[in-house]
Amino acid sequence: MSKRKRAVAHLKGNIWLWIGGFAAVGVAAIALDFDTVGAFLLMVVGILIIMADAHVDPLALVTEDAFDPEDDTEVETGRAETGREAT
Image 1 (tube, rainbow, N blue to C red):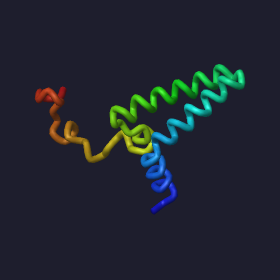
Image 2: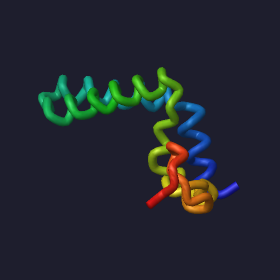
Image 3: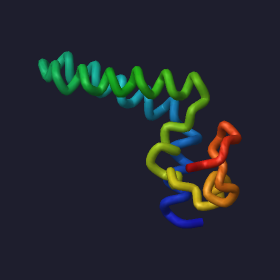
Image 4: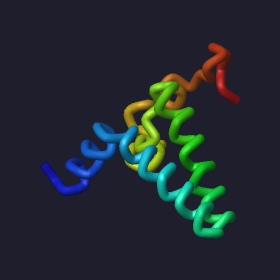
């Protein structure tokens, strides 16, 4: 297994620990009077919690190809998703 795949598997398996770590660093930053940095980290925590709770993989945003070459059905058939002929 490549290093990248091991790292992604580690992050996926321990996502709640990473969220807790970001939250702890955010709280520590606010306590040390780094309010902007702390607020940003707590915002990231909130987004990660929402994504993890909705079972959305946050790592898929950066690790998966957005343009899947196997999903070219519209180009092959010449039809849009509505079923009409493409012009």
